[in-house]
Image (cartoon, rainbow, N blue to C red):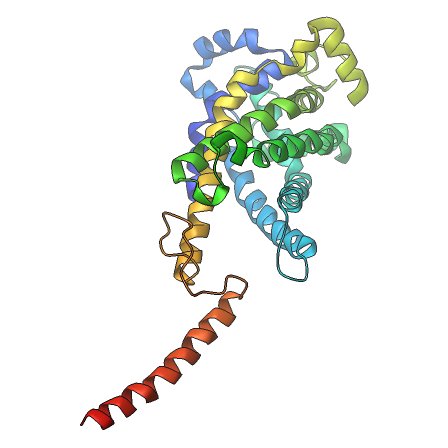
Length: 318
């Protein structure tokens, strides 16, 4: 968790640029930087780091549950079901920790020289008492809908990886897995980004903040936010801030994906399924359909049968 928090912290600058571009306040970034200094680039970073721990724990726990649900009787799970399990797990973790995301957005868009919120707890207290509990979940519907194109984009990339590299996925190197993560994250984030933009606008807008939170368009709901954004900023306005977002998301998910693949290989190697963690070359004579516990029991059984034979051979030789 500390590793991913460090990455999240180093990428906070791109997160700030993304949020300000999405709500339409990016033109004030230069003025904020001059007035508030480099610290302005890390606005909302503490909230993001505090959110990352419980988010990751909930996502992992939910993912394990969904994997068990989607696994067939033989213990296999398809790519589509694996991606669905990841998407649903992310959805559960997002909904559970969503209020912290709203607070992070509010802390980012506010003017540090004339702040509306003094900190995380004050922001939570103020939003709850001024706007009600549901204000802490403003924009969550857009987040849930955004998982559909994100999952579709990820699936499209993964099912075509062997065609891109012209070799089976079992032969991919760690560098290839890193590139695969970059490609999948880039495509998925680009497809789902309009929903992300609408979510940020809905989180930031508030009648209790100066200039309604600095949002460039005014709206009454998610659909109206889409409509007003296209009307005033064009269709490409839904992708405003995409470049800064990709600078954060692509390396983040690429490192996570390649690390996951390498750890999976290490586990397969330690359990005796493959010859080396650097490749997926299968160990000769090993039944790949066996579970790890069954494989270990088979090894112990073979050792038990070999030891009496060795003793008998020694006695015969002597």
